[in-house]
Amino acid sequence: MADQAAAQTPSNAETRGNAADTSPASSENPPKEREFRMADLAREAGITVRTLRFYRERKLIPPPRREGRIAWYNEHHLARLRTIAALLERGHTLGGIAELLSAFETGRDVGELLGLPSPLLTPWSEETPVRLTPEELADHFSGEVTPANLTASLALGYLAVDGDEFVHISRRLLDVSTSLIAQGVPLAAVLEAGGRVRAHADALADIFTTLIRTHLVPTLQDLPQATESVENLRPLAKGVVEAELSMAMDRRIRTELENLLNGGAATPRPPGPERPAHHERPASQED
Image (tube, rainbow, N blue to C red; front, side, top):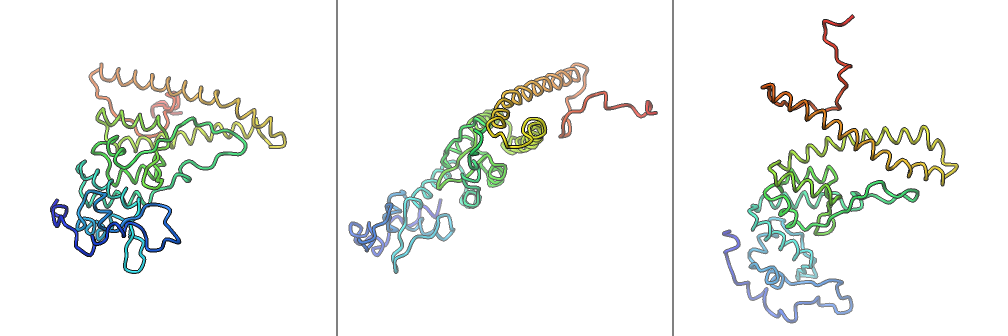
């Protein structure tokens, strides 16, 4: 890039006294993390001071801390510069990186994503969150990490932001998404399907929680018994959902194969739960 190729040598004012300038002037209140003058940060990141200024002007890095006329940068700035370099190597443009970082900074944090543990029950979910740097995220979804997809992932709750890293809510969902993309399914389609599955999963959860509230836990007067009832329902609910989904997939796949064998084309069905055949009657048979 032209901006990175320009001016390989920082100015004298920026490089003068590096040995003395690598720590703040006040020794009475030392920083909790390493801090850098502009020239030192550029050297650590492997870029020129001119490039660093350019990134700052484009708001690709946050403003530095200032003491009078001196600007101090920290480990967060260094991590951001390394992320920018890694994304540039993967073919992203500076404009695209700016949009990605904007979505990154406005994303949900980890506390909002994972929620607080219930004091009464252990979570039903057995998912393991996965920490990812922006570079690792780009490697998982090669060529698919766009501002739109990142925003959709954050909104759906698959991703959250924790400092300079992402946290994916589920190792299993991450592995499934990565496998689908490797087989040629666009990430946008994976996220759209994930949103639709989430809506159906929420509907199923409503059914089971209504069942619990109506028949098993009408009050919380006997908390131990209520807790035991909910825990006992856990494997039953999972078993019902797995069995019904397996049978629904069998029905659907059989129908699609029959259509193909009969010379027809497999056509996508509109979103929504499958209705039993006996609910549909031709107009000629109406009473």
